[in-house]
Image (cartoon, rainbow, N blue to C red; front, side):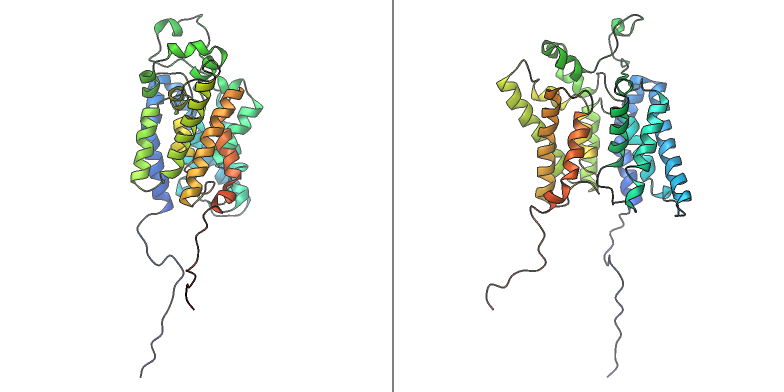
Length: 326
């Protein structure tokens, strides 16, 4: 009888053709409609800021890799995605240096200290964004009137552009001036890539259909925001805007589909992801009501990311089954 030798290689043993680079490229493709809409609304300044953000992120990663004596990982596209996300979350009037610092800090502080891709406890783009938002709170709110704004708002001498969320926080009666359909389509003041819930929703659904993202965290986030805003508006209509207003302004839709779905900083179990999103959405509304100057959604997601290990322990995956009869 001949002895047969079995050679067992390392996992994975079954491959489906999905690679990290392909997943990142799919995410950027999903972001493209919202980015193009931002370019249309804010013009060349928006295009330049996105280009600067991507360039700064790539240059920082290449430089750090070289200084550390490690092979460059620019080929996977993650640095490009990080710079793109950060630039899309700042207004078109922000100075170039702000985006350069934010993108550099995203890579230098948020990504590279944690080893290979997938080890960062917080989405690197959010690290860079919140560093610059905390350090330069006035510059991060350099809003610009979109192309679809009324002519009188873009005329010389007109009042500075103001995001709908901040305007309603100052004067709750201003909510009546914003049409839900206009907000949903993206006819509003805000960050370059976060002003169109419609395009962000389409991009998010594309990610889910392509199985690059799972539905639990995004829908949990939207449900959490809707419930918290609905309860707050019912209790105090003058102190809390309606649920639709909260969902269609700021970076709510961007956060739901493109921040809550980060692969390394969010839970991996279905219930963990849903509760992560649900609590994150509720916290974002609470931060908005409390008057946080900028970035309620990013702050909420960062705080939830710190609790990701706890969410993953809610429904741990068992190895095997316990025998009922010995």
